[in-house]
Image (cartoon, rainbow, N blue to C red):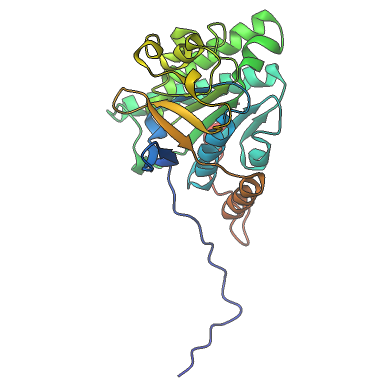
Length: 290
């Protein structure tokens, strides 16, 4: 007997079924084994010289977050093009505008403070998967543009102070931060900020000191230095994560076509339900912080 499927049946969206509470695949280690990061309760700092492969790691994380259910993106990209493919999926996309960047960071801190008030009222210390709150992932490409180039010295200091506050508060309330820079120097990544990032990835650097600025003082002297990564080995990095000892990894590579295809698919999965104007995630919490 043949079963006929009515052509008027409503389409069933097919999503990837990912969550920010799932480990994120970022590449392989030197033994060819897959490498995953639990970004939800950590912050990630990545740095290295131009062309080293930072954008590949950033886009892997951005792609995972874009495909996740109940997850929001806040993107900072002064160059516009590195995170630009994801701009239509973001609650906020900040280009070379430090005033807008400061305003968005202030709003994020309001959201974080409200979440901690909720956690306290519910006798909890961190957000869990079943709580129903969206995960807000903040990704900053080229941190140096906002902390040393754009705006006045006072604005740069305010941006850095607000970012330090968000990195400090975001870990337990479902608001992780991922930041990248091409300039691993003490004025860009002071120890007080670096040490708040539980995960650190050092792509090729030109000196032992630059590698230490990312990973932490003393690792280069123990043989863990990103200055020994070949200039032709893009995507290779030292990752300091679980275990407390840096290990060599190779970040997974996405072509521009891959990135835009993933972004388009993620936008499709987040589209409003047929016949309604309800967005895929509840905007109330973010709007209340405006």
